Length: 395
Image 1 (spheres, rainbow, N blue to C red):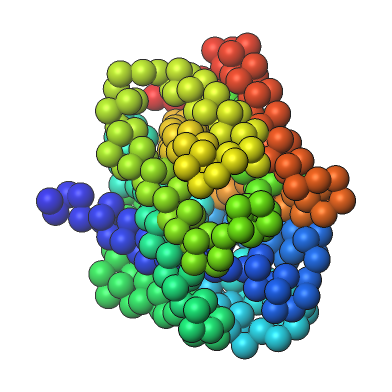
Image 2 (cartoon, one colour):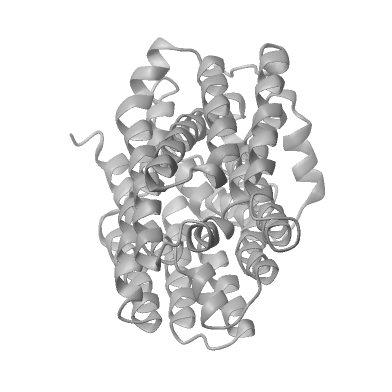
């Protein structure tokens, strides 16, 4: 029990923090559209802004955690995250909404640090299961957060924003009093980013490595495919399925529940029975069908079947890809490598919502979902043809 305590603690901290993130997921697009009068394409910009800030700061915090320790960076980002939600609670204009997402984006740039923390405290054999806990935290954050957000939206958006901030503050308190620095953390490793926001040479060094570059590319295109629907999923629910904020919240909660079940209870067993390559192929097949069919569910029951399929895909893909990145990267550089991966994923979350919002408004409500399905189809081919050639596991 004592041996697994740090892993349990980092899971609790990430989960509590992501509850705040999850609260805003189902209500942000409809809040921007109905309360502030923002168009679908501008909603894409709002969501992309959050991810663009994470793109800038993920490798910075990952590198700083390599140098100064994981715990300190986690504490700082939790406080910043809380401030971003407070700003959202008083938002009454498009510019203030953008500011709230900038601040929250800086504070939310610690997932790579949490992944590095898990990498520090797990063995190579147990890393998929450990990384799966981040997915479980995301999944559970998407189970309870959107439901809480949907319920609180009935009271008011001010109260919803404060509730999100309070969860990040609670995570800060838990981290401050209970979260230890990993015993196996390697201080003073090969730190690439010290003062620069973006170090192109360092990015090239990580991405030019065949193994890390290949796996990070898979994660990038998976994230882009899903990010196409970040701002448009709730709008689709309102436009086509006539859902309220609460119903959208319940739907997001269901997606999170399925994902959490896969990443928490099943991924460890599946990883023992099937290879990483097989799980990747299964996941991308589910994503291709799930994303491509989302606009065509016809009714709530049909939509639930489709999002179940999509959730099976995300639930199997994310922990396997994160585990692979840690397996193929240099041990002394895992904080930075995982930070680069999260930064590239954030770039995908910039491009996805921009395309999703634009295509939803100008090309058709189904285009963002079809785009994601097509990209996942290409990833099936990519894995089938090149996985064995590029993926080399470090002992």
